[in-house]
Length: 320
Image (tube, rainbow, N blue to C red; front, side, top):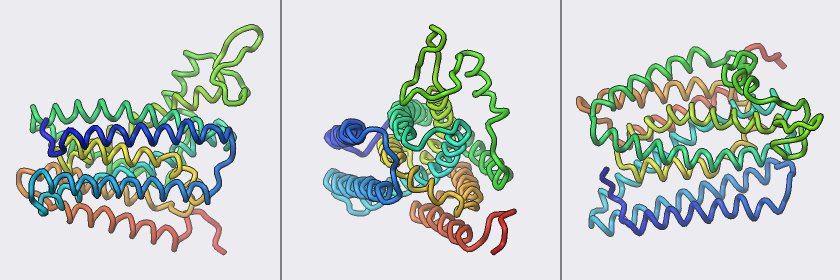
């Protein structure tokens, strides 16, 4: 696997991630279980976005310094930005599923922070492995790009048909399997994952939620990682854009949770983006779509669907 990033930039990236997790997990843990309001979530979201853009600026400088070419640096930084926006966009669908899981289990809002914090670590580890394996496979077998592209097109079509339908966990096979394996308490025990009832150690609903959140991220990673490989084959860009998008997932969740109902058409936009990215992968040896065009399509589709969502009422919503 070839990458344009120098070794010191890899080390810098790892250092930034570890420092970010330290702040998120150690410093914020002192706050204890508490409700995160829109203002706090917005402030942290802006911090994570700013950090991502600062890193992209450092990446641009490193590429220009190592290659001596401003054009190459511009192209690589655009690839990072496009991958970052794609992952952020698909994370919105993740968040809607998290909302459904938390609502189904009636998880108190002040407990949701810990679930998401643990989920972020799991997502970073899992996606790092998947990206490195995926990068190796693409380097060895170019034809896998076509499989990824076809998969994204089918996923986009499926997402389009599922958009607007009321999601449910009642028939979820993963939930049924977990309930067979683990005896689960009917009540929460603070932020604990295990409790004791009638002298037996059993799982709390919070552990079930953690497991479902982890499974959800596995499913969505299968979609989002190939989508970024359609933009670039450089594992450094794929990994960093993915991880920086994930770092802000917790703050993004609490921010969007308050306004989720206003973006009821967003899944249609995400479906269009997946089909476009899938088609881009399938056509890569026939016609290579420029990175700027991909970035414009992603931003344009998101902007249009969000605007239409805000200006229209959800299907079945009462008219005022």
